Image (cartoon, rainbow, N blue to C red; front, side):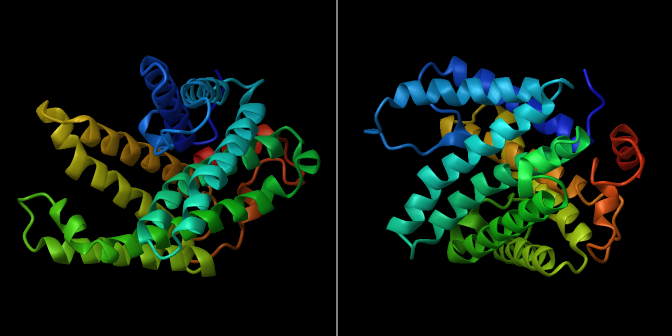
Length: 287
């Protein structure tokens, strides 16, 4: 097993392994992160098996030094194809429906996490030139841009579906509409901060924390109670997976100032600096 590029990397890889196992156990049905897929889609059951195998294989591969770079690239390509085929296509058909953007945003967060890992491992093994602009500094910037757009989509959905969002606020918290508006505004501000590079590191960290808190306060109690239905289990799984991917993106800011993007290249392994790649990874972990 390799020293992970970050804690988020290890958590994200473990989450993929769990999702892969879940997908295979569902026997031809999709794990929550892959839904929805049209019922009349050709070879639908076979595609569900493929999703499970990709998640399981890439999750294991991300934790193994000889396969980490390849696994990150396969995962990135697969998620990008999924984003275009099943999420962006819905936006094209229903551009005025906000939930289409929210659904695409969920997959976009996973793409961003995979993209950051691809940039790290491609650079750390000297593959940046062969991987093109998807690796190194350019790759991480692209991942952050996509992540920022996803956060904006999440924020807009809080206001577009304010009553539904407020209904998810735990009963022991007063003024549920206030909390729904506050968290929606937080997503919008975080997305804008990432886009313009002002306090971007803080914004990425707080957005990941907000996803984690949402998972723990809204869905974890339902699951722990033992009364969760299939839909609630699915929401918990998606929320946890998004948190893990967001953690990877937040970890990409390690070694950079909290107030800007300056100094980013010092935190990317294999970016052409004099130090060996492994020392860059270690330095990033120690920051």
